[in-house]
Length: 293
Image 1 (cartoon, rainbow, N blue to C red):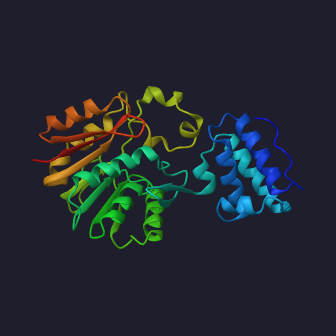
Image 2 (cartoon, rainbow, N blue to C red):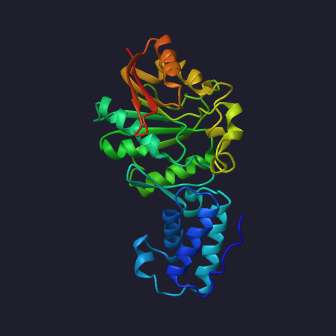
Image 3 (cartoon, rainbow, N blue to C red):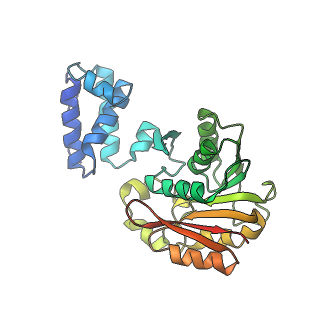
């Protein structure tokens, strides 16, 4: 990494240009946007604060905090870990190293469920809830629904509970520690549910080392590694769907690139009916939706 500039005695505008240069040299895809976001974090307030304060000098404390943030991002620590928040479905979500950072591709799953689900007074199960972004986005859209998020990580569940409370959804969202690979994991879920959603780990084990540093060095491995072919979690969950879903209940999985057909076959093998395979904005089939008979 190139040496960091000395932000002492720089104006906000000067510091912004210096940040852009450092982030660009680090090979980041959106150095202008990220410089503005990190500078806004340093100043306090939104990105518009950067524009209005362009001629103001940074304080010593601000210069120190900006240098720390830029160094962390240059080392490929995820922006969401530095800011502590990530927007998903136009809602702010707290993010920590214990959780997978919500990604725009996953909004495709929300769209698919809303298109095929009935809404109303339904019960939703979110497996591998992480930040809770999928479950909470659906509860935000379906004001009468109740939901349960399951995760193996107590730390991730604490983040999900904090997000539910911050979004005023805590009364309708219940977070439960559980591991779907272990016997009796669903004992306290009060199944069956109307809707099951899941963004499981789906990266083949052998592909982990080839991921971007932002992901492989900072995201929780348990949320990434899907086994030898990336399909271990799907197999484990799909075997149990008949007891988790009500008759005519809906299941929606996020899938990795090229996995939709195999996941659809696994669902059909246990008697579910495929309703849709939905592509994201990049044209990648990202979601498989099926229904229990």
